[in-house]
Image 1 (spheres, rainbow, N blue to C red):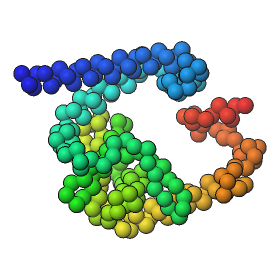
Image 2: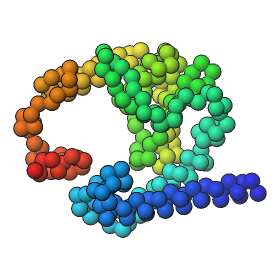
Image 3: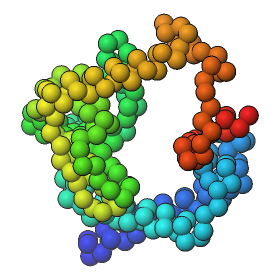
Image 4: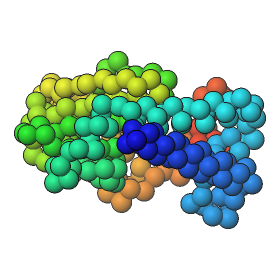
Length: 228
């Protein structure tokens, strides 16, 4: 009976999620986001990109698959029984510093087990990362600053909900230094586009070259600016 009730609860969660998706789809299609900027705004509706019904249905099917995989996973079983006082963060908007520059991020889930910290990152795409990504390395830098831990105490788990597969990553001192170098280079590139670094003032708009190649700008959320 308990198992049947649990399965029924998951089905209700799936139904609620799909109902919300349909409501937000209708809102976006009507472009209500122009009146209420915090409502759902789909890229396809803003730029008039046509998708078939089967393509939209595939998105909905993937949502259902991800939900069912998550609630049936060993990771969920472990998390739901984890002591509340050992939970560290769940989707908090956080930040860390590198060379006095604040870098923002949001960790899906972080918990403490004994002396180790486990950081979970949910993925809904169609493939798992082969290497420890820049994103996950940034999580490591944040955890080291926030909880004062060594890299060897971090366990980073990337869980792909579409395929019900997880990749476990460990962090090394060398990896930490490499990502710091990458971030410093990225910061330098962005600051080169500022006329006043201290006050974060950018150059005049006409100093920026526009991307003319549609293959590059096709999925850019700000490509409308290049049409003005």
